[in-house]
Image 1 (cartoon, rainbow, N blue to C red):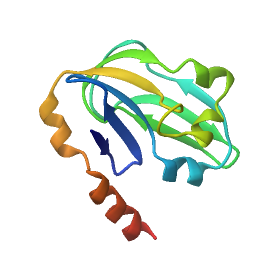
Image 2 (spheres, rainbow, N blue to C red):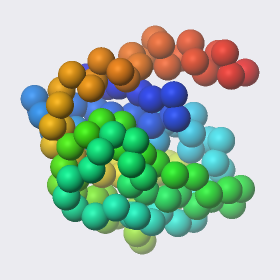
Image 3 (cartoon, rainbow, N blue to C red):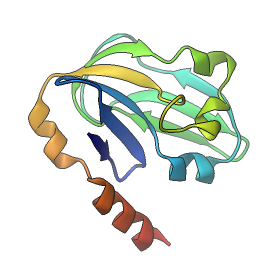
Image 4 (cartoon, rainbow, N blue to C red):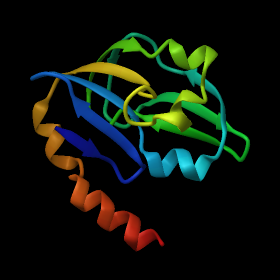
Length: 124
C-alpha cells in the first residue's frame, strides 16, 4: 500500500509494520537534477514531521520529513554515490529510508493516490 504527504513524500508499506519512504516523481521533477542527498537523521527513533534527509538539486535544497513516527532502520546508501537515482526512479530505486512504524493509526493522516493527485491538480 502506498501513501503520500502534501509535502510530496511517499510511504510504501513493505510488510505489516515496515515502510520505505522517498519523494514523489512530481517532487523530483520540480527539484530538477539531484546532485546530493544528505541524511540529517540517524538510525533510531524519529517523530512524525522530523527532518530526515536534505536533497540538493541544481535548483534548490529541500528537506524530507518522516511522514509517520517510528524507528529508522536503514538508509539507501546507493544515493550517496548516485543521487541521480532519485531522478531516474523516485518510487523504486530512489527510496531514501526504511522505518518501523510505531503507530499504525498515523497512516490515516496520509493521502491516498487519488487524494495526492487531486492535490497536484490544485497546485497547478
